[in-house]
Image (tube, rainbow, N blue to C red; front, side):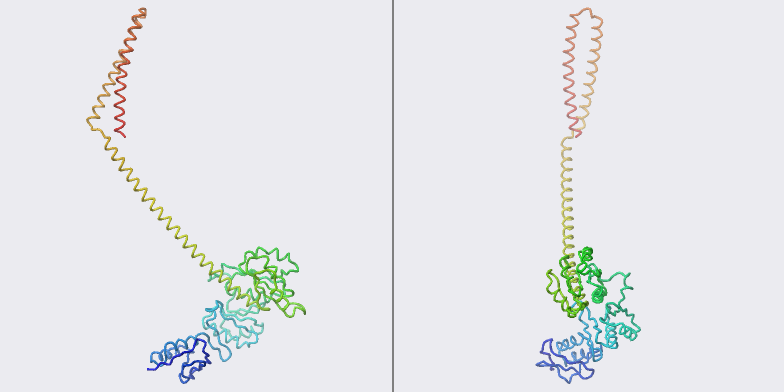
Length: 433
């Protein structure tokens, strides 16, 4: 079994995929035979190619090369090849440049793109008459024409204004489009509408040229709030250099062909912008509002990607801190429970050691009761002696002697009783503890 291989690189020149006429390739040392038929324009053709691989007539590597080249673009008649993978490669889909194309050609290209699943199909530099002709050729599609920027698009910004935007990562970031004068509006609107069709928030600041610079200075808050600024100017083209000195956002300068003779159709403002004193100003071609919008899209996507990475790192850090907090709390609770158990065990052991037998407690209570009775008896005797002293108050000396005797007797008894009570009380307190 002999496999037909492809030894050339992905840059081999494929002339065309004509139906039924086979593939013709140049620049391959061991290319595919020109007699082999590989029509890859539809699903049936792909199945035929897969069957050839299964039959051993084409190597898998050769089939992969053929398929990759077949699906990277789609032919429209004999006048266009739609780059179906441009958005996957560059981040922005192909846009039809309608200038110098007939309405029939533009309509055919847009129809193939729409049928291929593109949801952001647009054509730039479309005249009013051409837009009407294209819409007539595509009655089933609700195309919207934006007259000032000369854009014909499948999406309608008016209809989508109240809809929730699908790409939240993009819409978090904003762009600002400035123009020096009203004559620059077509180019400025081309940039603004292109960004809006790509689902970005756009703030417009128009007619703020350096001839009345106070108009620009009153809008500095908009510059500071924007992630990227597109600055459109003709004449001397001085506006981007001034804007670059007022904002930390990247500035994309767009020279226009507006101006008198020495402006040379936009060459003078182009040179001014290229020689801007303010650093951080990039310049696109003359009147190229679309190119400025695509460049802004790339910058905003990088910002969004950084935001996603930063957000992921922050989220992981928060999750780590939260997990560590939970772990520490759990450990502290376990330690507290262990200490509490030890304390309860110690208290229980101490209480057991200090408990007196029941008969000893009863004996102490009986002893205290007896002491209380003795105290009462002594108090009664003191009262009797006092009464006798009052009756014999005339006999001074004997009374004094008797009083001293009773005081001594009472003191001795009270000391004995107090000592006994204190001992009993102390032992009972210990028991209760």
